[in-house]
Image 1 (cartoon, rainbow, N blue to C red):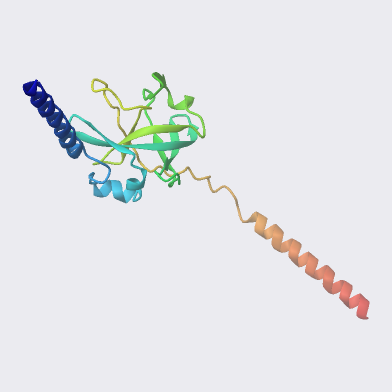
Image 2: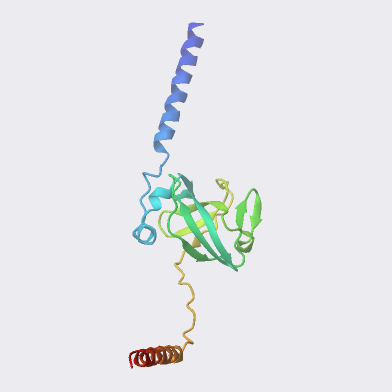
Length: 187
């Protein structure tokens, strides 16, 4: 009886210590060191980190984003910080073969809707993301898309100064009419 009690106590102690060692070894958001390029592109990235996921020796930070706009394969999103505030908007151009895994179903970029919140995984060494609604399984390949700040297309400069010439002519006609009215009134 005493031998069983000693073995049970030893097993309990060993299991509790192994759990503590595993908890200490698991990386957290505070442990991740962001590369300079990531911090330059998004300085508040640490505020968006909700957890760390490791796959093939590479660390990914779990974060949430809100979809702002989708035009073709261009997705504009805004990161959601852990405290609920939202960061700056970013745009990415995804390839036509890109899919977001949500609820076990694959969605094209054009099928995403405005206001939709997505869980994303951000690698610590480059400004990129992968979209999954839950932690991907070990056998699932994570498709990471590099985020490049895209300039919004500018409207062509087709206007001419003709509008300003017309505006100046109208102002001079109004001034002439005012002077004529004042001259007749005081004459």
